[in-house]
Length: 362
Ligand code: FES
Ligand SMILES: [Fe+2]
Image 1: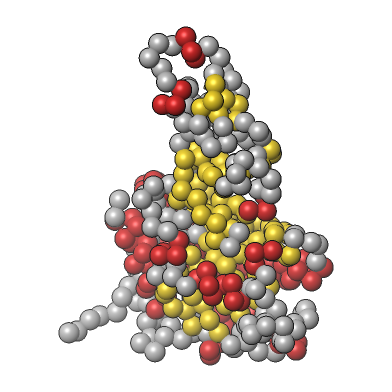
Image 2: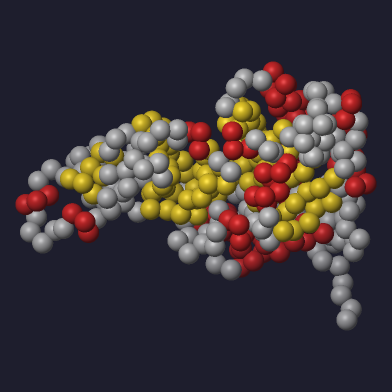
């Protein structure tokens, strides 16, 4: 069978506001999305609000210690219930004081007993699927969504091996990176290292051994693996004897908008892409330490990463977005090498298949 090269996605996938709308309503509402960290829900009644796919939501820890997520809307006449973050024994709507248990059950409302035929237990908050992935809370607006372990096989086990203390980690710092491009341009840039040697001198020569770099799909996870080099010349101390993965780098991109990345020394950091418009995305880089303890080493690493790899990528993705608006662009062939490896865009082919299906499937 003769097959020609696979071409990159058409430019309008990255520039058309209607496609962006479709993604919000379809893809983002049916995939696992990062909500926040369990460290923000230490005690019963702790809650935090967040937004996904244009929907206002909140997570809380109930009296039994169970983490729950709900749409942030009162079932009486639709006032929002909570804002920001805090602690509450009950959820009281600010409009007419209808009151809900932390389980979402309606507890009381002024004068509701006078309504004939109304049963209190016929009303409760609309809940949303939530999963803790090693302390990271993800929600899915699709009630029938398959669990995360089916979407991202083996990722949980592998990540626990690469970051043995992951369950004790808490966020130390969030570095907020604004990019003038469609979220898919930024995610694609993250998902190939064909551009690394030319554009990321620190990363390519200081951390990874480029000719060993590869990215392979694992369900809907794209797993990055590589050997490392120059571990003696790292800008922070790495105790290679601490555990079997102490000298390793790896990353797990969880389709569509989140990635766990581990630097040598078991240093966990994360990417959370948050699209804000068809040509705007904010990338939250998260950095973690045990108990959220301050660490000069991690803070310096976050700064170094912001000043090198992240900065280098901003210029690339913003130039691509301008190029996608050019009348002169016709999508070129992806460089898919059957042998894979760092000089191949096989991972982009997989990613663009997911992107195309996500848009055409709804
Ligand atoms: S809208 Fe919440 S009590 Fe009326
Ligand atoms: Fe890059």
